[in-house]
Image (cartoon, rainbow, N blue to C red; front, side):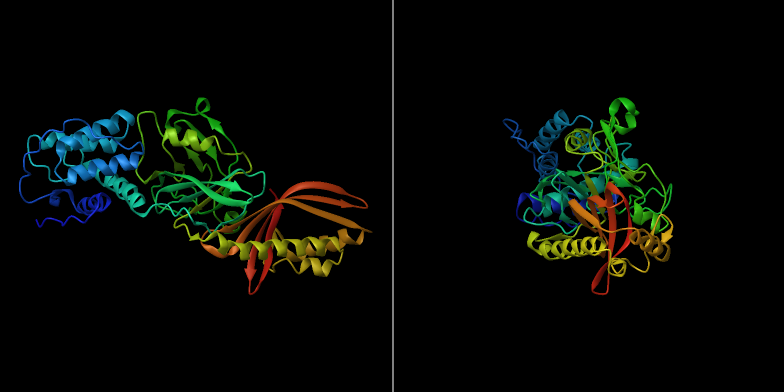
Length: 412
């Protein structure tokens, strides 16, 4: 087999190896000639602390036929991450290479049932290392966080990545990112048991510590609000979508290995879990995150917040026709469509001599996969001549033509 040329740079060499890993195991070849004898390294070279950087260095050494150094690398990786199955597989290959030429990753005995999953894990981990997270850009979904939301999570199922953002005066700032596993059957969950991960805007609803769970869920779990109001409107069903860890005998799972949940390594789940707030932290899941310059988010954020303010003023004015113009003809909330909703509002407003509405702690998130849909959540203080009420409200605004209209509203 023709030897794949080695591009310049250590990362590029890892990517060249990745191309080898993409073909069937029996056709793999790291070189058409036996490697020259390798001098034993005088001492172990320093290893990076980050697992993906460790993996890249190990595979680079394998690619360069530096098997002794690669063995030191993989031993260091296993010392730091003893349950990392991919590292054990590489170690098995390196031991096998002492008896016969190494033809590729995944040739150790009894590895066939794991090789496809492990290749996929190598692919997404090295892809992330190659592309790097755009530190000067943010997902277009994070239009506005309110002051009480300290963090936000965005998951990219296509890249097997979870991004953690901190609230910086209402705008999102990237803190860290983590490798994750998601649904065996891919993304866009539609029904119970389809083994897909949902796509949409969700919120953390509970915290389940290790002591309340079986070992399967690892260090803990955080259920999220699937199906949300928009999912139900689309006829989607199912339940039990969580962020959770892995069993104690496992370091990480393949990119597509869950029944629909988002799965992190146990150390990462502990780290991320410290930043999650029940009922507040948004978890936005996309199969392909759209990144934007933060300046590009100013216009849609302003447009939606101004639209919300116009809705508030028109409701407060007791001019029911002006108020109802903010609602879509396709409005539906709890089975109540626009006609019934309008009649109810007219009857209520007829009993009012004055009305005061205050809105605070507003968050605004664009919906993944739908540029014309936004989720707006806020604290509402309702005060009138015959009723006082406070609630946390959630609305789904849809752009119809050039205007935004409410297609759903209810308690959050």
